[in-house]
Length: 308
Ligand code: MG
Image 1: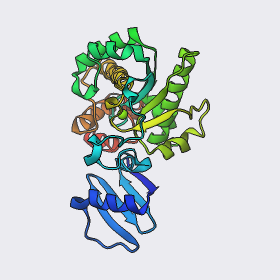
Image 2 (image 1 turned 60 degrees about the vertical axis):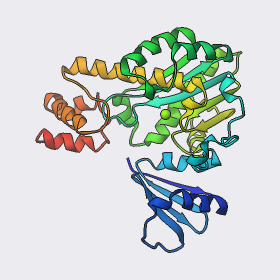
Image 3 (image 1 turned 30 degrees about the horizontal axis):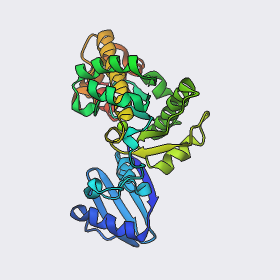
Image 4 (image 1 turned 135 degrees about the vertical axis):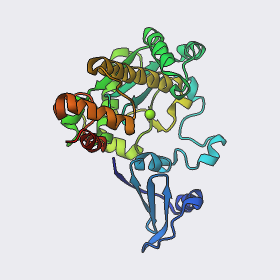
């Protein structure tokens, strides 16, 4: 989905950015710009005023590197005090939250907030809770069952039917903000009177953007919030949340596969187009809308494949 983000940075950050994108600079001259660059699918236009525009499907993630100077430069990541997180953060009692399914045509959007009190950190680590990208699907399912027995969590699943109904009003980022906020709100209520030292959200949009969207939500949680990309590296609560949301997403794909009688894939590639065409032939757009996020470009491709 095309996204458009504008952030405002200091002259110092602007020159750091120019350095960072050195190998990806575009030669075209745009008036009043310091540089233009293309990083993956994201186009970056930096103006003399300090405004920097990010355009493309991953615009928010790219902008997140610069917003709030949380990760000013990937190269300096190992340097001390280079994040906004307090030192010793990984040893604190923290609520972590993460989501899965945003980039997959089939399946729901799942969001989980998980609370890991400091006494539980070593235990979860010993059980193998870590970055879900390092785990296989069966390991994720198995670990999710263990985690659910050990810690408080809130898991929200936005099924495709509901997703499609609200998608015209809520863009994908707004939806994620609303779900993260609601999961955290419910979890805070459940663990009360105990309180986490902090809340860490695996960052998917610049902090200012999160705060903008959350301000319109009921039950908004605005305090103790930290945002960082690759959050699972900073606290095991995010890793646990990531495993629980991924397991829930995978289980929904398995259910869809059983209901439809053929393999329902993850992702948004050619396999998703093919499966989409099969669903269309079986029950048209009404059936497809129960399993897939219809605003993805895959819908048009599936229609062509199905001869519609
Ligand atoms: Mg994430």
